[in-house]
Length: 430
Ligand SMILES: [Mn+2]
Image (cartoon, rainbow, N blue to C red; front, side, top):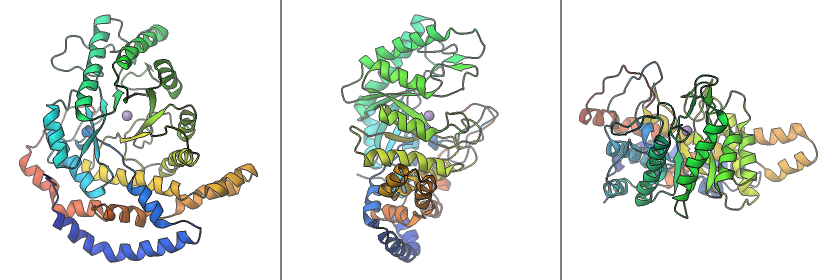
């Protein structure tokens, strides 16, 4: 039984207003692409098959170290969060899976599975949390978790990750992303080598418990919550972890976890070349890990990342199936609208990368024709692929204009009536 949160009539009415315009735009774009030998329907089909997971924590309003300002109708628990994720999927048809964070989303796996099924959702990678203390835990993570100096604290963190695998196994998940806050705030506070040895030994314990068809993701982050050193500070360390642990261990690239101006697309290429690209946390940033909406600051960089992914696909890289997830903080927008918009931006970058003329690009690269090589990328990037994105949504039963249909539905006001208002004021990213 399905329990879609937006009425089919609401979506149909909104689509009706826009259908003629879309048909004309799609037709015109199809003719334009056909002149360069591209079949628009083939691109639309590929876009329809591209999905990005929504993080359960993303549907709540985020915050900064200054404060958090909750919005209306904040989800109270994982079942409310799933309702919100269901809305995003219903309208975009791009986000059929939800990524859970344990212990925040802990609930009976049978109830979670049943609830998700009514919304047409499944579960993506599981996320552990050993960067904050749960109410009932024995040992604190104030000074680290998997790399902690105390063996009992490390054991507790290992057991938590193993529990995440067990819960995920019951939910049909196939990957664990290990979240840590381990690091140091002062030079001398932590011995880099010994801490990393302890981290690797802990990760090896977790790796041993992975089912055969699972993957283990580690994620690099240059700073925060520790501000002098973090245990997985860059992609080189991330690669060393994946290489040390074994074939089921791969690296996650969170676009916001790099210094400004870092050539992230090149990191992506390197990880693909050596079989260690596990997937992405999509977001954008201006200065640091601001967790802004994907494509909001540097859409060209997002396109260049997708250019590497499509290139890998084009070259037929074996076993290439990166996981895609959004990981961002929504502080001043309705989180549902931000996630809808981000899912679209991610698909946009993918569609633009799909129309790059790769034969021409190869030729220009071999001829050292830098100008035409870069122009080949720009030509694809400048193409307005919105008709393709909208048509993909429409074909799959979604909305031509998902934010427009969402606003027309009055969903936020409806849930605000059911869910009590949350008082803000405290700091901390949720
Ligand atoms: Mn992340």
